Image (cartoon, rainbow, N blue to C red):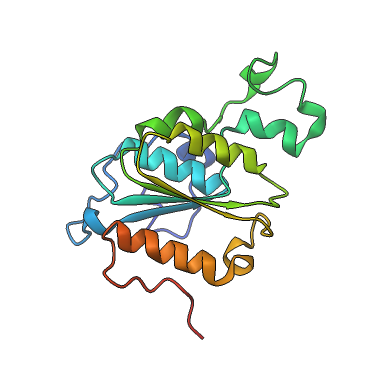
Length: 183
């Protein structure tokens, strides 16, 4: 079933599997202009898509993305902090781990990292860890010190949109990127 054409939601199992088909099966999509954007869990999906489709897109934008679900377990549920995570006894219970820290080195295109300094959901150090894993590849880091998990685009104001536009222009996605919302 093609979930993009249906009104149904994809089953969780479908989301946890790496993509098996090309990202751009349509002939009317130009991979040299295709950008994958992901925020939070969507960032883990974006990393997985980009890692599995290295020749099918131009660049990736990650906003407030985590290193893995096990790393997030103790952040979201503090009681799990000593039980689930790297080197902890019950990490094996996490079936859909979304291990971006393992996949990010397989992403061959440039990445724009957008980090909220006051993120109350995903600790900014997890975004910094993903950034550090990309240190030898083309990437751009933008941090918004007063932004929270879901408001970087608003709190970051013109700097957010200017950074987004600059990255897309630098990567040749648009000659004059029009990223900011219009009234």
